[in-house]
Image (cartoon, rainbow, N blue to C red; front, side, top):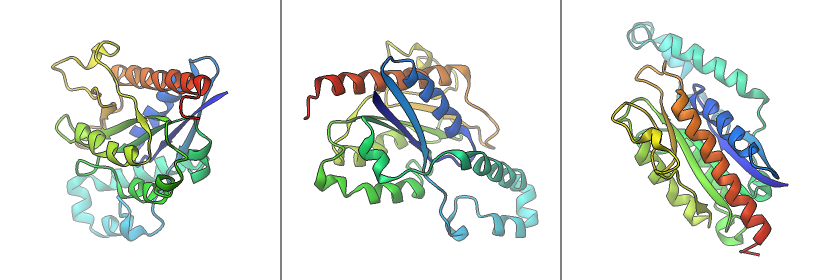
Length: 230
């Protein structure tokens, strides 16, 4: 079986939802199987994206920005994701294709993901990831929240690892050729979470997520059969 790894970090569930849609797309391809793994939260609460202690102490601030509900949403998502295995370097080694997902923070990847990729830097010298197809998915608060910048910025370390990038082409994904507020682009899958995080991925975004999974699966399967980089 050709194995496609879907590795993600999700703080509020949007990325986790996309990962499931991508996994379904991967599994549609005969002879290919998906595996979901997660990048864990930082152990130190002082450097988490959602600092529960400080937000709870600042009652007035929490009320103004609805942080109390946001903290509860965060806790619920982390609890739900506890059953997903934590990603390891061996997961990367064993995969025939790798799809990465994480939310947008300041037009780039979160620190949790950067830390994991820093550990994966060892593969730059061993070449163990070279020639494997890869793709990206992300989320952001609004159409102008930096989702395309995040996908483009995050491509750089993947190229350093020797991965081969698979995008989301126009002809296969007419849904994002629109003047409506919707995620996704030629660079990868994305969803708009809304300024307060209340928007969930819509059917068009989930459909394109499935197509991305299927596309990476087809490429990974072809590479596995042909062994072009053996």
